[in-house]
Amino acid sequence: MATVEECRAALEKLVEQFDEISAEDRAKHVVERRLACRISDLGVTFYGRIHRNGLDPFKEVAPEDGRPAEVKLTISSEDLISLVNGELDMGRALLGGRVKIDASLGDLLRLRKLL
Image (cartoon, rainbow, N blue to C red; front, side, top):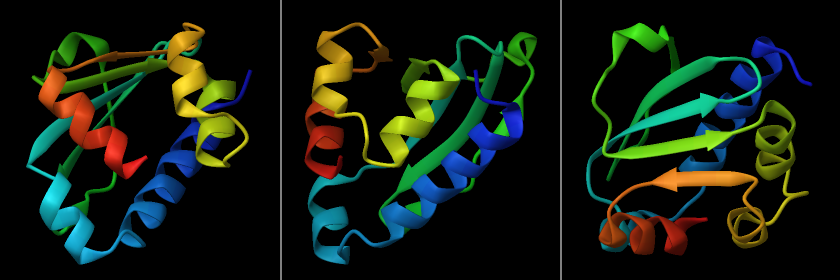
């Protein structure tokens, strides 16, 4: 099991990786959405926002805060780190039940283009 700090660092790396996506691709596939990333084994939720100009840094949110999010991701700490480091394929993780995404079909299709 990874620590909250390691998960925070992985999410910071994800923000940096998102910045590497071309402005053209972001313009085609990104609409503004609030994101919630729940780390299942740590009981921690991080909140962020994706928009055409980038991905805002994630902030830790208390579970009882209940902030609304259009895209909700549930993942274990180890799988988050593996995913961000390119060691875990998102498609396989979804099919294998290691990652759970709660979002509209349109949002899933847009995000698939970016991952």
